[in-house]
Structures are given as structure tokens and as C-alpha cells.
Image 1: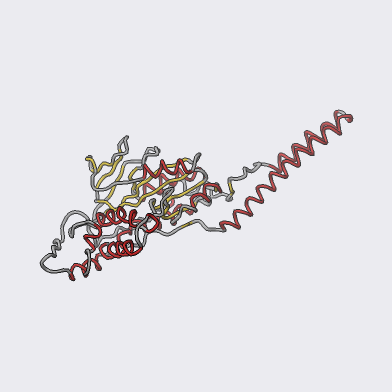
Image 2 (image 1 turned 45 degrees about the vertical axis):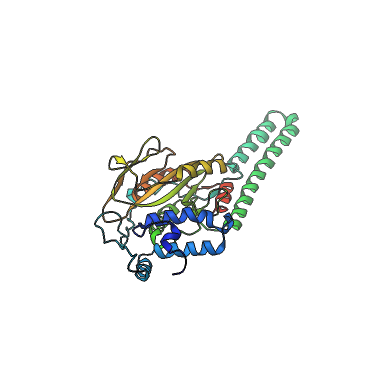
Length: 346
């Protein structure tokens, strides 16, 4: 082929793993993107190189076209990632999720705040402010009537405001609970499994809204794989395909595998959490790394401690622990947060 080959474009060797190719592409695409000052032709070729080398079948065909003298195709290894392996999504029973039967209540927008028990308050207001004064002192009737009328008007206004907010919410969002789409590249099967996990279980919460592919403020890329919003609680998620083993996070956010520092993967969720806390003041934000095995074997993880430090989790742990955390605001939608997040979907 004319010009630099695909491996040279991405700056990786011919033995590079799929994860290394993906990381190299994301790094170079940021500067090559036309919105960042790059040329459309350069970005298109970079994208073409990534799509070819991230697909095992297309990569093999490309390798066969290279000169035999420079071809260094590796033998199939019995360790490391297995490019032909795809994990399966576990199916959980409702009994495994303590929050499953919790508050599948009527959906309510969180702005403006509702009066709560408005009809009961109106009735009590009339009893206390009208009936009792009539029985006590007839001369105070006019003043009490004015006060009771004012309270009643305020309560009715609040009730109408809530009804108007519900109509506006329905007109703007309808019944949509999922925004965006997970990655469609061959190596992004972890993102597709997470999308299935979120939609299968967290749509049980009527107030939950799911997002795929969120950009950081000022970015045009899908920097965050997924997010789920319930009320003012937001979880930012990355889907990881890592080697089987037991994963944990220390107090500084460092990743560990099988009792040793894990250098086979990385996450940018801590920076994403800081960026979104600045973007969404008042939101309660956590991060989660949903880990799938990249070859045959089992992934386990330490129980979540509820901190904002992104923690590795199995799909089962995520559904149980993060689902329970979000279920505390199962039926509330914060319209300001929802609008802000929808605007960040790439």
C-alpha cells in the first residue's frame, strides 16, 4: 500500500494487542480530528487503519497483503487476551437484587418541587382557617377568609406547576429511557454487554435514564462509555475487558489484580468524575468499572465501599450494588441534569 502502513499510522508494532491498538487510535484521533485542527483525509485514514486492525478477520487479511519479508505475524499464544473470546452476560434473578421490588412508583419530575399532600393540606387549611374561626369569632371571619384564600391559591398554583412540569417533560422526552448507542467496533463487545445489562435491569427503575457515549466538557469524543442518572444520583461507567482474576482498588484509586499492582489496564474515570462534578454542581456522582474476562476464566472483585473512587465490579455486583444505590431515587427525574447529560451524548 502507498504511504505509511496502518501499523505505522497508529504507531504500534505488528504484535500489538487489540487493547493497545484501541488506546493508540484514541490518542492519535484527538489531535487528528478536524474539530481539533487535523485534516479530514488524515483522520479518515486513521479511522480506516483502526477499523481494519481492530477486526481480527480484516487484520488477518491485511497482514497477508504485506510483504513476506517484513511480516512478523505472532503465533497464537496460550496466555494474554484471546481475540476470539467474548464473555456472556449473566442472567440474574430478582431475588438476587434486593432493590428489585422497591419503589416502582409513579414517575415525577424533580423541578419544580411538588407540594406533596396538597389535597389533604387544602382540606385541613379550610378546616383550621375557616370553620374554626367561624365558630370562635365571627368578627375575624373576613381576615381568616383572606388568609385561607391565599393559602388555597398558593397550593393550587403549586399543583398546577407540577402538572405543567409533567406535561413539558412528556412533550420533551416522551418515554425515552436510553440515549445514545454503545460502541459498534468489534473490540467494543464489552460496551454492548454493559448496554444490555443496564437496559435489562436498571430500566426497572422508572426514574432511571441511561446514556451511552458521553463527552467530557469541551470534547467531541465519547470519553465516557456509559452513565445512569436517577434523581440527582449519577454513576459514570467504563466497560473493561481484562484478564481473569480478582480486582480491587486501593484508597488512592490504584488498580490491583490478584494482590499485585495491575498494569494491564487504565481508567480515566477519576478525571471524568471531577469534570462532571464541575459541570453538574449538586449531583452525587460515583464511578464504576464493569470488568469482563478477555479470555476463558472468571473475574471477581472486592465489594463496593460506596466511595466515589471508581471501583472494579462484575456485572452481577454492579446490578446489585449500584442498582440499590440508584433505587433510593427510583422514581425521580431531575430535568436540569437530564438535559445537561443528553447534550453531552456523542
